Length: 313
Image: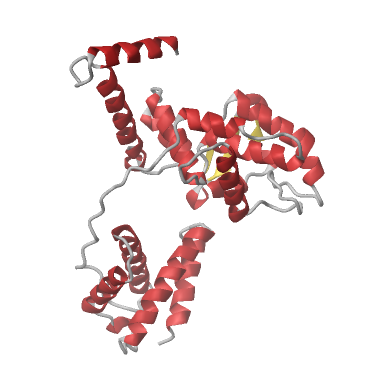
């Protein structure tokens, strides 16, 4: 059987029928190529001959390669989806994954930046060149909106509604959503559009953020900008676009924004995904309690100092 042909058709199905993004499709392709390569080594000639035991052996090999539980679970999810597709297309009559349990995941809380670190990051930008203005506008908007980096870089001019302080974006599964942005982000974007973007523009395009060649900024290019800026701001934490998204959501919840509204702004289809930020917020609350409450184990002098500092703020 032509494994490659079935894989190619499955990937086309993901893009067209399921509406998944190019990044998701590439992740599926990478994981499934690894899986099918292993299956071929087991001398399995037909996809409908794959047994549960062979998939279990593959999962064991992934662990032996040093992959963590989350990565192994992702591989198994791709394998399940592929075999389910083969059943739909009547290539196979059974899914060998049916009796395989997913690895138990321990949910790690994402690391975030403090509000002070975000302020330091945003205030560290120069405004000497068109590139400087663009870089500040991208990071300011990312923190103001909680967009995914792909959503940020795919923005078009028509998606901006600065006078009303909101933007439109295309999320996962091509779902459109409206996201409010603050006054500061709107002003910085207006500055970028007025001064910087015309100088970066090389040919007609409606792409919002342009690189020095007048083309759409890449994920890798933006990542480098963010990493360099974090160093300039004196931030020692490993900074990524997604960490800014985590910080955006956590800071909103810490300041009393309803979880459903945060879910809507982040573009989460399931509120359970958003609830992780309530756990981070609870950790923050616990830290405040431990410093402030007279029976938390702190001395009276320590508590008095804490309350004085808080009132001064």
